[in-house]
Length: 277
Image (cartoon, rainbow, N blue to C red; front, side, top):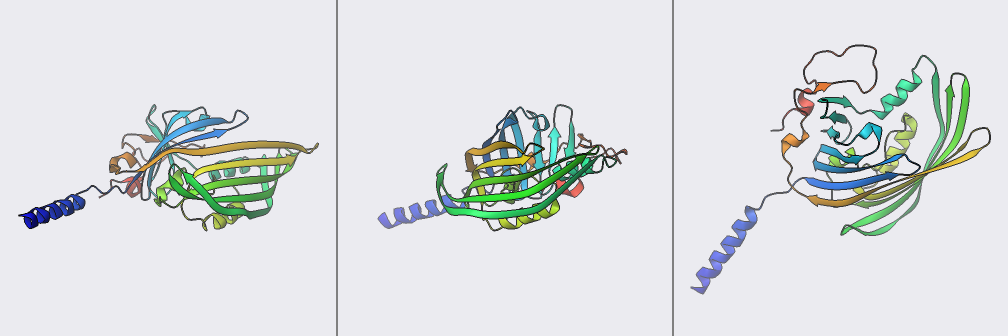
């Protein structure tokens, strides 16, 4: 009888293990704060492999209004800003914003030069939210020149970026918000240089601090800005596929003027945002 009881117990334990749900996705909450009145935001995000949905729960930043959300299904390479209040969505492309400024009838000209990226520190970062991390500290510098309506302005910019990176989470969709390289600068050479360094880091930052100092102008004025992003909660959980879809009746609008009308009135995301099997 004891042997039968033990056998049934083992079978039950094994069966229970086999029938446990597989949590392949990630849910997290994060807060970003920028000083000098630049704004702050709180996001709730759902990630599953290449897929991401980042909702702005609180935000006083005009371009990421409360209630809007970002969608990506290619690991953050392509982002769409969705606005449920007016049932529209737009491609989110910071590089395109820079390119638009440069192409405004020659009124604006931007030039980056002498980019440099240097790893200053690397070591044990301790635990963040109970997860072990690796601490990295980078220094990025470049010269920036801008010409607007014949007026010239130049400055030298230095950015010190610190990150506490965890390897516990590997879903590429985390790049939609917790990316190591930050947002595009608008200069392909500088972005490639930064990207090459950041690709060496495995994992994603649960905490990051960025301090940017610019010196320029006729009087050599120094300006410093700081931004921090802290993940306040993160866990592994299953995520339903429809969370990564844009409603089919939402209309695509251009975030930036293109000078022409869009083609078609259907959701043009096609297979990119099609339902997963």
